[in-house]
Length: 110
Length: 121
Image (tube, rainbow over all chains, first blue to last red):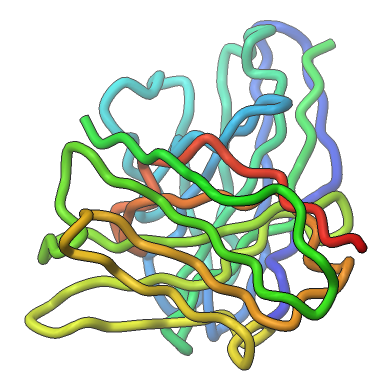
């Protein structure tokens, strides 16, 4: 199972919006609405930000939103804040009953 | 609030077995709605899901193809914990290992603190 494809880096200024894409195949992202997104600050464990494509767990800011079209899922962060600077990973369930992560995207807040 | 506490050695010799344990508080390893995962992270491989176990009237075990021949994840109901064993390790298995709870639908909402495991003689 190959890793999902994410851009290596994205950047934006405070207050702007950015979108991170996560491209898979018909055997993972395209097959289920089981895509989750994680935020990871250096030296910390990942934090769940979005579950099943577009749902935010309790306590996650509504500036974070998710969507999916075909084999590509997306994470959008609106109203960028300095604290959003982190690495972001997508994760999808697969037709082999396994999970697969994306390669990760480093978000820089300019 | 679920808490996961990892334990295990940080140094393993090549060809030996890597063993880690994840103690659960705030939930049960036998829960019919939870799943218990192991994930690792290295600079070269990023985040890599290794496998999981869960109970739905019987125990299920699912493993990543990349480690399927070498991995075992076991629940321990008496201690409310689960473990990871990875056999025949090489330096390529050097990584930070995390345990987590969560299903494919719900996402992995709780994580252990991470354990750096170095494979070296």
